[in-house]
Length: 339
Image (cartoon, rainbow, N blue to C red; front, side):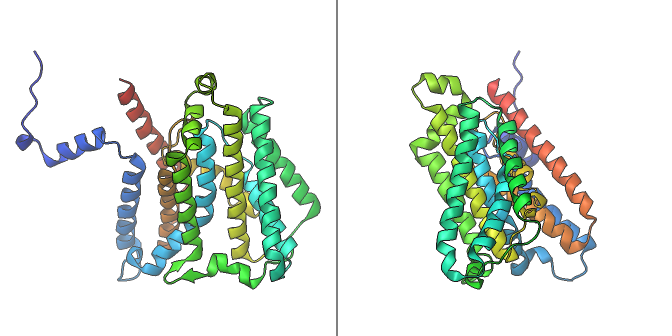
C-alpha cells in the first residue's frame, strides 16, 4: 500500500525547503556561496574588532571582487577545457611567462603596449594549439601533456630570467588600478570575460559541440563533429584567458617574475573553483557562472580570514572541505537524476 504524503499545510517549512532544494535545478555552489557569506558575518561578529560589520563595507566588497579577477579569468578558460573532458596544468606557467614578457617587452614605454599585448596573445594561442594537438592528435593524456608544456615554459623562463624583469608603463597599470565610476576596470573585464564565455557556451554552435564532445567524444565524432578541432579550440581559449590573467597580474605588480603564476597556484585553484562551480572532471557539464561563484567563495574566505585575523592555514582546510562537499552534492544529484 502506497504511503500517503501529508498535505502541504501539514508539511513544515523546513521540509518544504529541503524538498525544494532537492528537486530544484539550482547548482549547489550558489547555496554554498550564501552559507560562506553568512558564516563570514558570524565570524566577524565573534572575532571582529570593529563595531561595523566589515562584510557590508563597500570597500571590502570591492576588494573581494578585485581579488577574484585573476583567478576568475583563468578559471573561465579552465571551464572550457574541463567541459570538453580535458584539463590544463600549463596555465600557471603561461601566466608567469606573460607577466615577465609584458614587463620585459614594454620596458616602461607606453608605445610598446599594443604590440607587446598582441605578441603575448599570439604566444598564448600557440601554447593552446600545442596543448590541443598533443592531446587530440598524439593522444597524450591531458594532465601529462599540459604539465609537460608548462615545465618547458618554466625551464625557458628560469634560463632567461632569475628575477623581476623590466616594468610596465604607468598607463598600463590602469588595468589593475583604474576604475569607471565606483567599479574597478579589472572587475568589469572579469564580468565581460564571464559573459562572453557564457554566450559562447550557451548561444553559439561551438558551445553545443563542446558539451557534446565532453559528454562522449566517440558519439560526437560519429555524429559528424570535428572533435579534435573543438577540443583544440577550447585549449586555445584557455591559454588566452591565462595570458589575460598574466596581463592583469603584471599590471598590479608593475613588473613580472618567473614565479608569479606558480606562486599563485592558478592551475590548481582554477580547477578547484571550476569543480566547485559544477563543471565535472568527466566533461559534458558545467558553466562559467558557477565557476565565478566558486571563485567568489575562495575570495570571500581569503578576505574574511585576513580581516578577522584567523590562522591562514584554516583557509586551506576549509577550501578542501568545500571542494569535497560540493563534489558530494553534485554526485548525489547525478545519482538521483540517473535513477
